Length: 331
Image 1 (cartoon, rainbow, N blue to C red):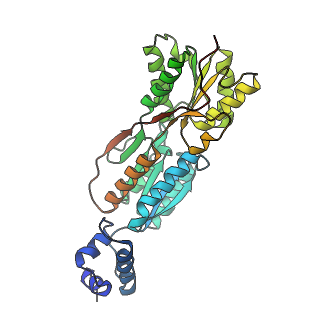
Image 2 (cartoon, helix red, strand yellow):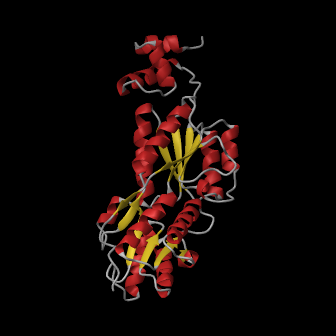
Image 3 (cartoon, one colour):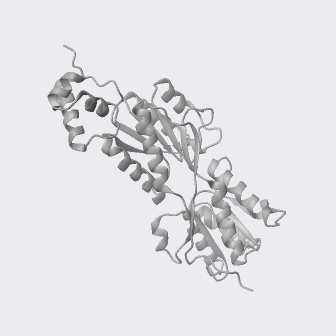
């Protein structure tokens, strides 16, 4: 005999409405009640019509504290609703990302979060998105929209504002030769930060702002290389596209005989707590990890529960955190 929610409700000693809320992962059910209903479904062999319990978080930079923080916060949003996250570290848009998505889709994954993964790359292979769409598995993006996909919600830091905050801070200190150590061409957040940086300098009367941009990898080594190039052009301040690049810029400046911030100021981007403990403590533009993760988690819960979620890209304001790596330039 087919088991329905009436039998599950009787077994768990709750109402049918409560069973329905648990099945659709809606709020308003305590952890103990949710566990009792889940146990009753397992005991009775109830065939749940919704998807599995795993939510995949696909990301490359798991060594970066910011991305680890966002993934952990997404887990904390989903866990009370019976969903568990699994971290999938892979190169954005590469074969490994598609392999992860395919394998998880075959195992009934509930949803996928692309955390600065292929959704950040211009011209990325859309196979992973097409697979998820064909299986009716919901997915969301963080810090990058999906090329050719209009129905997926995206939650991003406002990169244009981030660049403006950094330039404005340095300009107020008195810097007029401000350079940028940015990520590679074709990376959406990097491209947007460069656009914001160039616009911010142009607004302050710099006519050849593009010459103050150096593109490199999102690594300590990339930041070091970019800093050496910018210092050779006479920069007295550097805006880095990540905190790791900023640490590389500081190392590069010191190896060239410069003091930070005595000779050159450096501003990072991401804003992990550990940057308060480096030498010198890093001035940075902090991404709102808590709000990004919270909104992404809520979006996943709604989509898994077959509820509508506003589509398009939602932008969140970053915050400038001033520490000891920036100061007024020498006279």
